[in-house]
Amino acid sequence: MALQLPGWHHVYSGKVRDLYESDDAGLSHLILVVASDRVSAFDHVLEPAIPGKGEHLTNLTNWWFDRLDVPNHVSHEVPVPAGVQGRATVAKKLEMFPIECVVRGYISGSGWKEYQASGAICGVELPAGLQFGDRLPEPIFTPAFKAELGEHDVNITFERVIEIVGSHHATELRNLSLRIFNRASELAEAAGLILADTKFEFGINPANGITTLGDEVLTPDSSRFWSKQAWLAGERKDSFDKQIVRNWLADNWDQTGEPPVLPKEIVEQTAGKYAELVALLAKSAE
Image 1: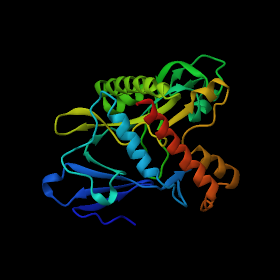
Image 2: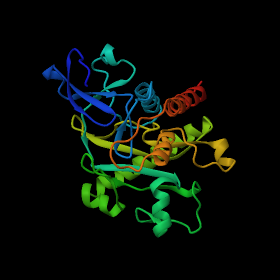
Image 3: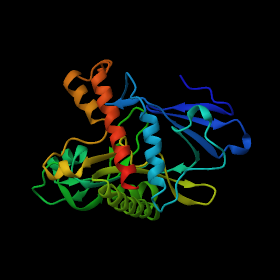
């Protein structure tokens, strides 16, 4: 159930976030994005929630926004309501591009499956003989088309991005995504981390026409981080995210009907992974 927040009214809830608009007509260009503690996997919202998750995701996104030289959607016109302080953002409404701007520096996840089948990811040909978790010769832009609610996003080629948003915006999205990924990779490495892959979402700020970074950025829900030390030792699957949840579900649920309730130890381990990532990045900035 959505929270009652003075001065704001609830307009939408996704799997893990709740959106509110201001009761003040003069602030209709803003949206309040509240990150909940809900966790989803295999297109289902799971029970119970992960304690502290919403706050961790919000803190991480703001941490990255402060260090990336690119316009973002954060607005400081009005304060975040006290009831959601620490896990919400007052943001500028953007005219979002229907593109998931995925960048991969290492081969894993759905990219690994696609490479095994075709030797390429989203039309980008890759060297033969790569193994799971290998570093790619250079980061690659592997976009996806954002599907309707409840549907799976579809991996597409860059040529298809051009057809959807035009050549100028397609090139801009690719260049911005790769630039941000490279900068984020440097910051992650300083924290002893590897940024294997991530996804960005951009939109046009109607106030100035500038392409702006929105949504959550470089969090465990949108990115795959590995320990560099573990990667060098050959461990490629222990990431700082909800992979623990996915793995447990894969072993204990056939993906029919409603998913089972997560055991206490899985919830605690997942919460620990989020907290550990926050701590590592914060320490690296000291």
